[in-house]
Length: 165
Length: 417
Image (cartoon, rainbow over all chains, first blue to last red; front, side, top):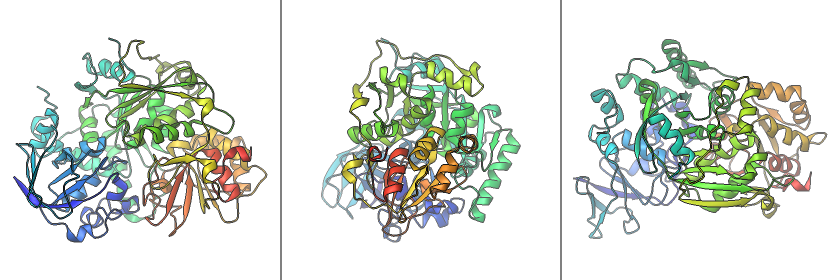
């Protein structure tokens, strides 16, 4: 069970909002890069987010670039899961590959600052503040296995290859 | 039931009867990295325990985003990539050669290939009938080592085009119009498959422009059939042997079909800060523009520079509007020099940058000041994209860009043709 508070974002948060191209020179200095996470969507986010919190977004979260640095700096900021109405394809795969769950659910009823409890195995989100319960969509089996190992690199390190069956 | 282009290619490369919705493991025919995502890919490759590249001769390392390097930290990233290529035997493409997607189109992509790379605009090679898609560093690291990756076979949206572009209208207007219609998530997880009589008169360059921006509708791939135009292109590039015809089956199943009559299209522009926020160029007349940028994997090819030079030859850019040009590759650079396009553009007041990506993503060169607006031929206009969250990026065709550079405000190119 994951427990933390919600940081609410709207629709269409791109990878440029998450980690802008003007910080490319910091990409091999990840702690410094992470200080700019989501800067162009909410410059105060990085100073407020705490270990265990959640990003709660609208449609098409993470659209744009394939930069894996985007989910990486979100994870480094302490975020333990992303909840969104929908998420862009490359970002979704990248987040799972880093062991960061992305959960698709109707986020309209969740407000900024709400206390949330996420049960990954049951597939549910409980909004403690508003006392509502949500269920999130199924994650494909192969992604669950990657998530179980903590990401793609530990998965390959352990299995040496993709195991579909 | 017949197969879409995506299903055909993924069936051939997985050995399965791949249908939309299936999960398959497919052979990867080409894998590449570039300098903003490559260093993390190298790190993940070493971390994964994979020792060598599955196929060094089909693995490429491009230094194209920060060229020449503006800072010592990026120079150190470049060292990591050069060392990796030297150690593994991968193809190395260093500064000045050009933008990865243009070089892949010119020299490496083949019809029917599965191509993955750590750059979202990898979809560009779909113009040549490849299943090409962008992935993150972890996925690409594993694909480099194993020579394969997993895919969910995408549903396809069929885009059937008829007619011909009218004067002043081009492929960029088609793809901007399409994205405006279906939205920035209109094709998420899906493939866009292009066909119809209208593609017969679209050059390879125009097809690359369209395929390049499939990802801006969320698509996993944007794929054209490999037809006579693709064959002619490959012959011209000196690699006739790379051609194989690829067409979808007549009874393939599509999630939906969208029809476009090219005759009906007008010059189209995406407004800040989303690619699907489109309007007609003529509706934006009066919007002042401080910088025009012509280049990138979307519109930095020879015919793009030809169009811009055709409009700007013998004229001068507006005094309040800077004009920046970046040819997409060394070959484009040389050919546009030989044909006099660069001469015409420089005489019109253009600043020419080396082949590369820098301004498009706000990495270096051409960063905008507070409150400034740029009309760019690139593919993204998100807030902060060109180096400043207080600036504004409009996207348009090379013709619209050139007309705008002349007038100092967004201008329908048909006014100056």
